[in-house]
Image (cartoon, rainbow, N blue to C red):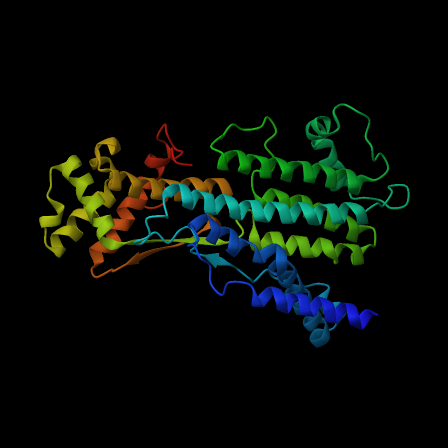
Length: 371
C-alpha cells in the first residue's frame, strides 16, 4: 500500500510538471526578485549554515580532541551578500524605495528565524532554579528587564517564577518581536518608535544569548549550551539583523552629472567642462573642506535628488541595521580616477564616508524621505 501511494504521488507530480509553463508569461518586478532570493534562507540556508558550523566543530574535535575543542570558540566565518534591490544601473524599477524595501525584507527574514529558534529554546530550557544555580549575571539581567517584563506580562505575576531561562527567553522574544514590528512599520512608512523598542542592535541580542550560554555552562549543562543555543549564537554572528550585505551599483555618468549640479550651484563651476586633472583637484578640495559646498538639494534635478537619496539611505540603514548591512558601492563604466572621487564626495554628502560624515549626520532631516 505504501508503494502505491508513493507511485501515485510521483505520477501526480509528473502530471503537474507536464502542464506547467516552462517560463513565466509575465516579467517579475524587483519586489518579486527580492522575495524569491530571500525564500532560500528559511527553506534551507539557515539550517545549512548551522550544520556547517556543527561539522566544523566536529572536525576540530576529531583532529585535536574534545579537551582542546572545548576551549576553542567556533568562528562565524560565513558571510552572505546580495545585489537584488541595489543594482540600479539602467534598471528603472530599482528606486530608493525599492532598495530600502530590500534591506527591510532582509531584516524581517532574520527576525522571523530568530523568533522561531527562541521558541524552540523556550520549549527546551525548562530548568528550575531549585535544581540548578543560574549565574548571578543572568539573574541580574532579569532584574534589569523589569520594565520589559511589566509590559510583557501586563502587571500579572511572573508565569515562570522557578524557570529563569524561560522567563529570560520570553523577554528576548518580546524584544525581537518589537524589532520585527518596528521594521514592518518602517516598510509601511511609519517610523514611530515603541516606548520599549526592542534590541538596539544584534550585539545586544548576542549579549543576552551569551548570558544564557555562560550560565548553563556554569552549572554543568554544557551539552545544552552547545546545542541549538550555540546554533542560534552563530547564526546571529553570521547574519546580524541585516541578513546579508547589500551591494549598490550605479553607472558613473549619473554620479558625474549629480556632482556637476552640486558644484555649479555651490561654486559656479562648470565641472563637466574641466579636464581630468582639474576635476581631480576640485574634487580633492571639496572632500577636504565639505563646508565649502553649500547648495540646496531641492534645487537639483529629480535625477540628482534621487542619486543623493541613495547615499542618504545607505547611511540611514547602516545606523538602523548595523554597518555590515551595506556591502560595496559598485561604479559601472568607471574610466577615470574622478569617477571614484565623485562617489566619495557623494558619500560624504550622504553622511557615511569622508570628512563630511559628521556634518551630514547632524542635519535636521537625517532620514531620507523615501524610506
